[in-house]
Amino acid sequence: MTPSTAFPLYPTAAATFEELAMLFPSDVLTEEQQELPFTAGVSVRFFGPKSGRLEVRTSAGVVPAITENMLGAEGAVDPQLQSDALGELGNVLCGNVVSSMTNGVGVFHLHPPRQLDPAQFTDLLEPNEECVDIGFDEGRAQVRLFLSSR
Amino acid sequence: MAFNVLVVDDSAVMRAMVTKTLRLSGVPVGEVYQAANGEEGLDRLRDHWVDLVLLDLNMPQMNGEELLAEIRSHPDTAAVAVIVVSTEGSEARIKRIKDLGAAFVHKPFRPEELRAVIRDLTGVSDDTFDSVPAVSNGGGDF
Image (cartoon, rainbow over all chains, first blue to last red; front, side, top):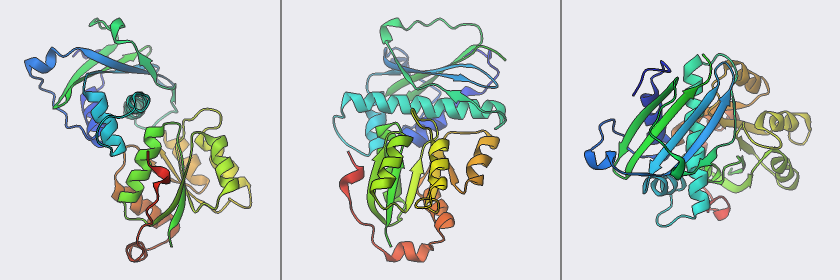
């Protein structure tokens, strides 16, 4: 994790996963969790007092669990609803992060969530980009916050 | 009494989650109608009797703030109880919403928070909630 955005990303990200998706987060990942590849991702761009994007990447098993928990359903859930659930989680997480960054001052505009192709993922971080890893029983997630202006 | 509810959100999963949370809150629920944007929401309001609207802010075509203004501008719907359910953090925007007579609930939210807001907004007491069994309705579930 780099301090490039000067924003405590982990607490907001962990709380959103826990309260919205009922997944219990840990900031200490096992070696096995750290090696899990990401199989899904979503990006939400925002504009306002600060501009940038928030990205959520997840390993296999996390998105089905998010979807089942949000819907209160058990068993296989339609892939379209899984994409919707991940998008909504990204949207809520982005909304909470940008609100926290400015303590309620100024209006942010969030773009609709955009699904990402995991084949395009790299580990590289841009300047002004922060990244936190979150472990769950179901796998791991990575949340990336990029700020294009300060 | 049981509330007929309209849930307006562009996410199908969030509409289902709001409906589920509403049922868990213990508030007696009658019919649950859904809409994916403000325009669809207005259509549902024209076609059905609705006591309570739960709406998101950021939606395509007609956003939640525009829908709220439309609701307040029509005599038939001006007095409908409205709760905005959003991640919005702007104090100025939340004030605009409250000035239009709507309550605000921050996402994510818990059943007891929703129950308290509905109680405050509608003036229906907890005793009344608890004395009326919630009506089971599959309309809001997937």
